[in-house]
Every structure is written in C-alpha cells, then in structure tokens.
Length: 313
Image 1 (tube, helix red, strand yellow):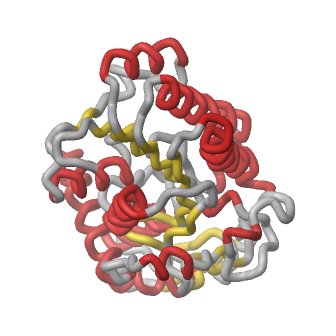
Image 2 (cartoon, one colour):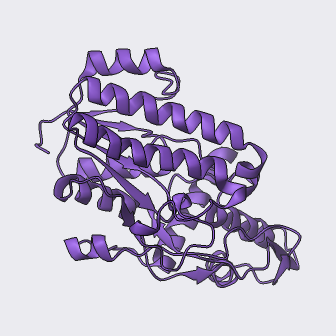
Image 3 (tube, helix red, strand yellow):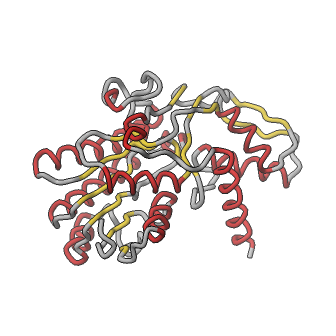
C-alpha cells in the first residue's frame, strides 16, 4: 500500500476496526475512509454498491461484523448468520466489481471444528462440525473465508482471510448481555469490588482453554498480512499459548483489585473445551505479537474505567 492510497476500514467503530485506524495513522496513511452504521448499512446491498462506486477505495479491511458472546450467539443464531453473511457478500462483491486492489477479511477461530486437534492448523478447516452454540457465527465467518478464496480463483482478485483467536482490548463491548469473556469478566470483577461482594461467579467450570490477542496486535498482524501475504489459504492470527478461563479470572481479579472469592456455575456451557490456533505459518513470515496478556488486560481495564467514568458524566 502506498501512503496516498484510499483505504476503507469497514467497521471502524468496533474494537478491531478502531485499532486498524490507529495502526494506519501511525504508519502515515491519511486517506482513510470510514462510515458509521447510520451513514452506511453494510447489510444493504444497494447502499454498499453505491458507496464503492462513489468512493473507489484501493484497499479494504473488512472488520465489520455482528459479534457477541456465547449466550448471544446461542440465543440468535439466525441473526448472526444472516447479518454477517450479508455484510461479507455485499462488501466483497462490491470490492471486486470496483477493482479494489486488495481486501483483508478479519475472520474468526470459530470457523474450526468443535473437537479440532490443538493447536488448530489451517488445514483442519471443514474437517468436522462447528461448535453448536456458535454455529451461526462460525458458518458465516467460514462463508466469508471461502468467498475470498473463490473470488481469487474465479476472478483473479487479491482477497485474503485471517482467522483470529479471541480478541480483547480498548473499544470492547462490556455489556453483561452480549459481551465476550474478557470484557464480561472485567465488568464482573470491577462491580464485585465496588459492591464489596464476597464472591464473583464465572459461568461454566473454568476449565475451558482459550488463547487471547490484544486488539492492537490484531491490527498489526492484519496490516502485516496486507503488506506481505497473498494467497487463497486462510492465515491464523493469535497466540498459540492458551489459558483456562479460571486462570484468566484470577489475573483479572488481581488487576481489578477484587478481594473476594471466585465461584463457578457449571449449569452454563463452557463451549469448546479448547481453542488454540497454530500460528506457525504467520510466525514463519516474521510476525509476532507485542502485547503480553497481563499488560493487555491492564489496558483493557483502564479502557473500561474510562468508559464507566464517561457514562457517569
């Protein structure tokens, strides 16, 4: 990408999209195009095609998506499938029709089978069923991943897809109804502290293992791939090292200053027993993450406190 190129970041208001905008500005790009959801509904094909025809971006980072935690996914699988597929198809097809030079699709580790060997290698895709509770979202992200491959194969585009492990960081959704595990625990432990609770209860058994990647590392990896990778194969982005939800809770408890006990409610599902991505392909290209988990969690808690303060004002 050249500094004067027009770069569209779809989903710039979200956690990954905002990190991508920060990264691009840091690298000296000034011709960055963004649109809020009110300005451009990416699920509307006509609106997306008009936008691309008028703006003619050179490069696209597709970070826009309907996202949520396991309970939100389980409650509304049709919405997670429908809206995400609409966004992906509309943006990718309009990008192809308007001769976008390159597109990077931000995918998800949810595209891997529920009982996949660990760590999960790119060649394990479609080797088994999706995790049932995240199936709608996982299928949608697989559709976007395969659409990149198929457009490349049929029309000669240069569209790439990245499968990302659990993302966290500034700009996350801390809603108790729809958040992912890190922001949910940050909120729980903080509220436990200020309410002087004797214990905070984590959903599930605490034994499920996940790997986590700070949002700015995700943005850095996607920028790296845009600069250094072309191909049909999806590329894993993340930390190979995993941590149990129980151990994650202990770290967040310490960071937030909660002094009570941690309890578990096994009536809630754990989801997949383990999700870790094999990132050897990306590592062999020369990329590695910058932020350690504890540092990233401290920054995330600071972001939560900033938002809580802003809400009170």
